[in-house]
Length: 631
Image (cartoon, rainbow, N blue to C red; front, side, top):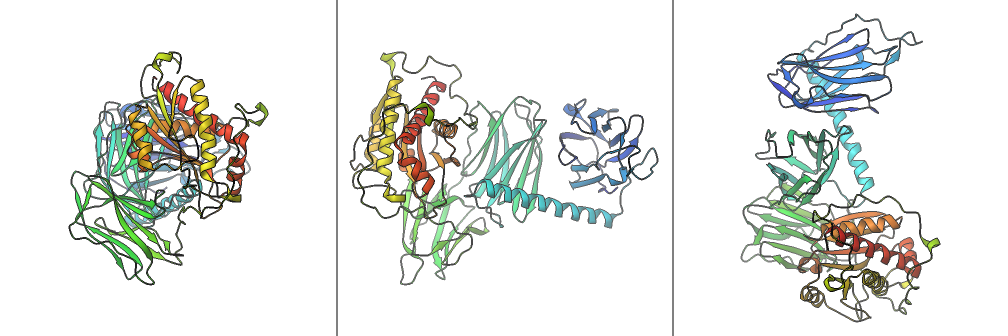
């Protein structure tokens, strides 16, 4: 049996987990430990000794994973020593020479157990003494074991990245760090992870025994003052481990232990970091930066790279801008230096135009429109102060822009069938994602029971008039689809006692600013803009809902309600800086009900009965949000 030797003193176990499918036990401590192991009989059990270790809250914990393992339990033998006991069911044993201790570090261990075998089976284990103590391997062997383990970790990370990419086809995980973990702060109402660079891409999980949680940050690297924390917030959560889990691709993992196994937690990435908080509470605020970074240059290098340089670490996000159809890089806590000129179009160059858009006093977006057939590649950073975006005609990792195809003349879609649709048109409900927590603790009477205290909701059918919006398969137009759905949403909400204000009720052209002004003027408690999507790639499909700041719960309710009624691809709830979301003073959401450029989505949205079902789902989500919010 092989293991890494590492001295330890007064270490404390922070978290542990047994993965039955892998037959693997893992645990972390706040200091280095040196485990030893022995196999005892009557009953057969593997005993893992942890000298100089205190179990703390783990003491006395036990688990019955089933199969050939009867029980796993943790015991404090005295004040300075502890042990883990893996007891097998009667009639089974295992070969201790096949037990492997592997450590990412001296304080994070995995114990790989061999498959237990029946005593007296046709393939019995090798004869062993009753006790087999693990001894430290020589230093070269330790290094070899560590290298082998790191290779296995790397393979596991690669598999995890591939699974994440398959589950989220729009997520791109770079091979070079683009997010830099700077600091971790424990607060009473949660945990804040401060980052620089690109907005974090995360995956948040909880262990099977619910005693610990992991946060993986893709495309991230540890830097600066990030260290393992010992502070415990008021929920009893402790940071157990902060590790660079992988370097290619770069992945940072944070492990948290929690004594409350009944408390659910949430994690949300924002510009400047990640907020982690107990479900039902108020998420801790994340500030992108305590200082303003000056963007010193924006240039087009060798007609192949769009390059940006600042005088400090950049906080940014990037992607295709739905308002303009151009590619945008939004910088937070930043300003543009005097005299900086944006690259402009040149003959044979990769861009048609570039411009600036001011989002707020400390946030602006650089927009540029690629030329025909020019593709935009993955952002790279040589340093936290610089970024570069390759552009060309043969880039491998390029997502086509969701530009709106040219308008096609078509008669408007007829008004939908009367509400409600026949019951046979309703599909079996699928399980939605968990609904977000209510904004207010005390439930109120159902919406509309008191006609003198009706709340107002603004419904905004996107586009209209001379602006058809997206035009998809068969010439179906976004403006016709969304007015059909929106008018039915209005009808359903008013039947439930909600006062509905429409930004348009017919086919007319309305700019964005009047839509926002109307919503702010009538004192609405919610604003919902309804749209349909388009993309160059016909395979793009599904529903997604956007919010800016205060509309997260509203967006989540609408998204979940649609998913509960349709078998559509879940593209998620996302944060965006659309004009109507940024400038409305109430919680706001923008829902994209499907892709008109996708044959299946377009066929569904062209069906009056299916549009009625979509209206019902959106209205139900709004009503659930209003009731949960106490209106």
